[in-house]
Image (cartoon, rainbow, N blue to C red; front, side, top):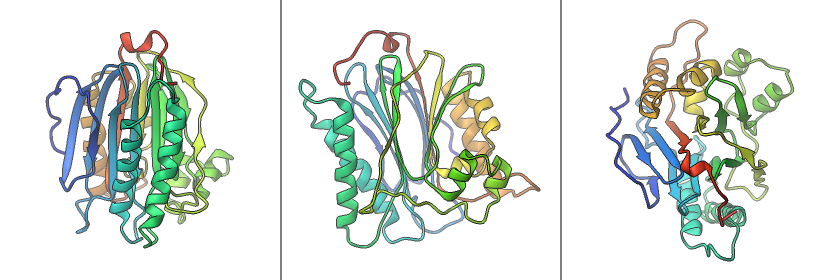
Length: 289
């Protein structure tokens, strides 16, 4: 089961990367743009390492980057791929010139550099990437693969939902499968767009307004393959983020270990980031956009 969330550690001013050998982490941080809760838990039913990775990267006083990566299981060096991708993107953001570069350009360059770095491993490794650029009153998404990004309002309305780059994801988007059918589909694990491919394609969202009480979620498929969307939204839409991340983690871990009837159950690595902006972070215009 998931460990208890640590106490809020105060203001996070430098990048926090979940790429080490720790079995699990559940953390809550303040950043200048807002609060972030993180859960990073390895699959208890497998002997190998956690192939997910995550990052919380403060860019400046008004901008924050969140990333979730899921190394493609069954392929060589899956964990190395997810960790290398995050380290490469984090390095690009750390070294950016805030006076002359737009954040969007640096993110794109960082993701392309990460793709080259994973390809250069030369072993066929690959990973997904779900990345959110957060600024004053807005969020912009970038994704490759089937890790998800959602934005919901306090009353539960879904304002943003990325489409997984997979046959099942596109079938759901087209209305050919409902959520229950998708979760039980034989091709649920297939994806056709990964970082670590010469044909990698980055899907970029438009700049979307984000209200102070909205909740942003980034997650690997360890979450969305075990909980229904309405369950997730109900947990995250209101209340403290530390309680939300605990509830998501505990319910997902319970589902993974207890298959029951029609409820989804798929043991996997589990990574989720939640974000809510502060009212101060929602105001004004930043320089990095």
